[in-house]
Image (spheres, one colour):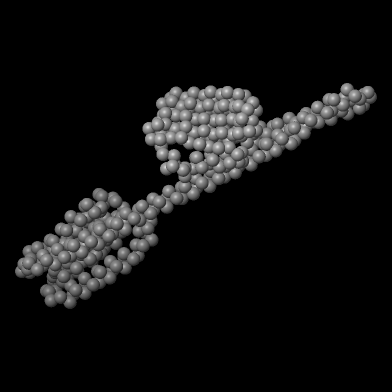
Amino acid sequence: MTQAWDRSRWIWDVYFAIGFAAVVVLVVTETQPAARQAGALAALTALVAWYALYGRRVILTDDIPRGTVFVAGLAALFFTAVGFTPESTYALFMICPMVFMTFRLRISAPLVALFNVLPPIFSAVFAGISFDPHDFGLAFFGLAFSLLIGTYIHRIVRQSEDRAELITELESSRAEVARLSHDAGVNAERARLAGEIHDTLAQGFTSIITLVQAAESEVDSEKGRRLLDLAARTARENLAEARVLVSALAPSALSGGSLADALGRQVERLRAETGVDARFHAEGTAPLPTGVEVLLLRAAQEALANVRKHAAASTVDVSLTQTDQGVTLRVTDDGVGFHPDDQSGGFGLRGMRARAEQVAATVSVRSAPGAGTTVTVEVLG
């Protein structure tokens, strides 16, 4: 809101300058002793200086101590001007909006009421003007108008604050989407390259080694066996290089062992960091394609991250089940739960489903408030 005020400050400054000029004209043209006119003009000029040097940095900051000092100064200078000449009352067109922009409505409304009701009394006491009941009628009319304008100002301020918060959230969301999209793209490309290398080069070198070893038994000459041995050694070296590349392209959590080992480490880390009773169970140890292992590992990491941040759970169960039909990862907690429909746009679940689509997997979330959450990832075939 402060940034919006900085951009539109000049509009208010122009309004303030026009209002000040109009009040000065009214004071000068009214039949009053020169000394009273000079006193009113001096107080009004001091009011302008007080706003320019102090008030401009206080308005719309919600700084109550500094705002109190500013409004107290406004009151002193305004009522001094009114004490010299009642025409200074028209300065309320400048003062009331400033009060509304300095304090919240529950504070500014009573203050504005005093600013509108007290001038007739000051004029009667200090300027020697006879009391006129019509002055109070005009004061209450001005009060009603001021409260109407003040309510409108606070509504605009509140809408601007809400809009600023929304813009901030959208910018944060856009940055998060960009980060997740980048991470998903990088992981997908790494998984694709690892799978390609594993399925082509690594398997090709393995076949070459097998064929060379079979050919060695059929070759009689020493030179022929030596050349075949050289070819087998070269193929083994290149196979080792291919496996290094596959390992480097896979997630670091998978580099130290199998998928089950990596998931077990994630569960153990959750238990150590949060004290949650976290358990892991695995059935089946058949090797999986790199892309599937990456998907299941990332899904488990995301689900466990949500447990840390949101679930307030006391127990968490993670299971990895491999059968002839496919592999299933299931993460279950007994936390606070949520409405899955309300979280359909969540970035974590969205990224999980995006990765699942790359390997024809499915992601399902079962949850309800107070009933915990279960995230299931299934890869068939």
